[in-house]
Image (cartoon, rainbow, N blue to C red; front, top):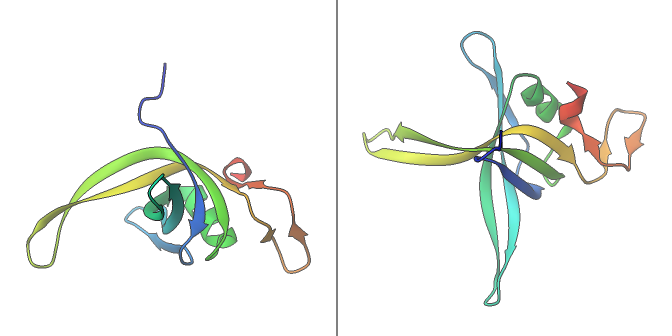
Amino acid sequence: MPRYNRVTLVGNLVRDPEIRYVAGGNAVTNFTLAVNRKSKEADSVDYIDIVAWDKLAETSNTYLKKGTLVLVEGRLAIRPYESKGGEKHKAAEVVISLLQMLSRAKINDNASNAEPQDLSRAL
């Protein structure tokens, strides 16, 4: 069966990921990717909110940091929310199911890895 809601992005983390645990103990990590967009008129950057759940959330929080170049794949999710002032808004975010590090990343204190790391496969 084809996948209709599928998003693939390559970009750099704008800041370090933030992890939290929701009711039931599930981990959720949020981060933002800066994705370059080129056009005939000018180059620009889109800032895309990314959400990772459970083991992928924990892995993202452990290995990613500001500036890391990653490829993510997932689905676009639009969720409503209400501001403190009671105004209704919508947030667009990509809920990822695959994460691959494309830039060199320090894996532990003694070693670094120059190969792209598919962190979603380490689950």
